[in-house]
Image 1 (cartoon, rainbow, N blue to C red):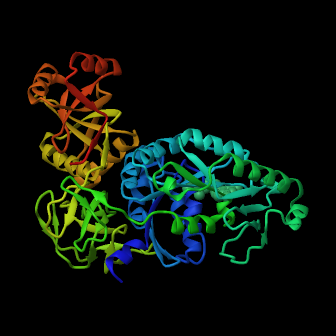
Image 2 (image 1 turned 60 degrees about the vertical axis):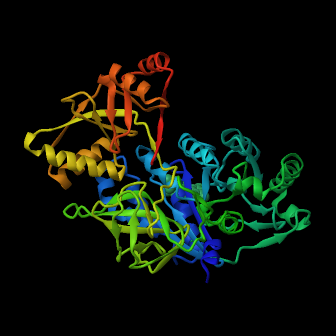
Image 3 (image 1 turned 90 degrees about the horizontal axis):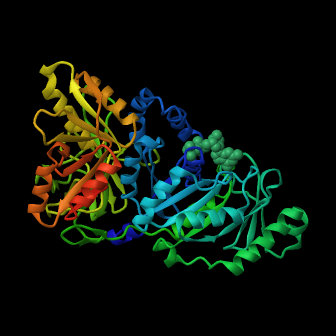
Length: 527
Ligand code: GDP
C-alpha cells in the first residue's frame, strides 16, 4: 500500500468526558466491537486502580500500566483506529490538553443524567480552540435520565455548535426500548447486559412501521414526535460543518449494555477525518510526504525508578516510520536510532515495524527526547501548537541536604521536561526554585519521585505567588525595562522563557495597566 492509502485509512481520536460518564466502559466496548479484545473486562482492570487516583501512591503504580493503555490501536472495517486515552484525574488535565493536540477528532461521552459537566467543558474549550471535530455519545439511557431534547440544547449552548442527532432514543430507564437509527431508518431493539459482542440485535425497519408503534407504545409515540420536531427544526448532518467543528453528530445509547456503540464506531470510520496537514514554523507538512516526521506530545517515566528511562510518545505527522531507521532530533541536531520502538496494538506493547501519520509510537530513551521535540529524517522542523498552561499553584522547593542541590536540579529539570511539573528559576539572586502546577497532586507526585528516583529529600514551602504569565514585547527595550522594574517577580521556565509571577489578580492587573507595551500570556506554545 502507498503512504497515501495508509494515511487515508487512519483515524486518530481521544475520548473526553467528566469522570464516571462512562469513558472506560465505552473504550472497552469500542475495542470489543473492533475485535481487538474478545471479552470485555480487560480495560476495567486498569480502571479499578485509576478510580483510587486521588491516592497518589496508586498513580505511581499506574504509571507503568498506563504506558501500555494510554494508546490503543485497533482495526475496524479496513481502518486503523488509534484511540488515545486522557488522564482521568483533573490534576493532570495539562497532560490531557497535550494529548488533544495529537488527535484529529474527539469523542465526547456524556452521562445523560448529568448532561455537560465541568470537566468536559474545559476539554471542549481546547477542542474548540483547535476546531477539532467532535462526535457526541450520550450514555446511560438504560436509566431515568434527562429528556433528549433538553440534552441537545444543553450541548448546543455549551459547545456553541449545532447538534445533529443521528440516532434517537425510544424511551429510557425501565421503558427504554432501543434507539432509532436515523441514518438507516430502522430501530435497534434494546437488550440488556451483553459481555460479548452479540451481532444479533433485533432490527425493525421504518419510522412509520405499525409494529414498532404497537410494541413500544407511548415511548415510541413520544420519540417519533420528537424525531419529527428535530427533523424540521434542526439542520441535517453536514459533514463539512462537522469537520470544521461547527456541528456535532449525536448518538444515544448505553455503553455498559453494548448498546449504540456500533453506530459510534461506524461514525468514526465514516465521518472522522484521516490525518491532515500539520503546521510547522517552516512550512506545512503533508501526511503523505515520503519523509518521516513526528512530534513528542507526551513523555512518561517508566516504572523502574532505578533506570530512569522514559517513553516518549510520538505522533507521526508524515511519511513512513520503519524500525531501526535513523532519526534526527530537530532541537539538538542529535541522531537517534531507536530499535525497540513500541506500538500499542490491542493494548499489548508490541515492537513496531512501521507506522504512518496518525499513529503513535513509543520511543524509550534516557532523556534525549523532550516534550514538543520534533523527529525527522534530517530536516529542521518545528511544529507549533503544543500548549503549556500558566500554573495556578506555586511552591518553593529546597533540599534538606545542601550537598544534594545538584541532584535536585537534575531531577527537577528532567521532571520539568517530562511535563510533570513546571519549574521556574527566579531572576533575583538566591531565590529558591519555584514549582508551578495546575493541580495540587502534582506537587506530591514530584516530591515522591524526587525521593525515589533522584534520592533527594525535597522540602516544599508555601510561595507568595499564585499566578504566572509569560511575557513578551514587540520592543525588546520595553521588555528589559519591565523586567528591571519588576525584578522580584521575574522568573525563567525550563526553556528560559520569561514569566511574570504575581501574588494576586490585582497585582497582575496593575502591571498590565502600567505597562501597555508588554503582552501577558496565560499559555505558551512550544517553540
Ligand atoms: P469513566 O470514569 O468515565 O471512565 O466511567 P466508567 O466507564 O468507569 O463508568 C462509570 C460508572 O458508570 C460505572 O459504574 C459503570 O458501570 C457505569 N456505566 C457505564 N456505562 C453505563 C450505562 O450505559 N448504563 C449504566 N446504567 N451505567 C453505566
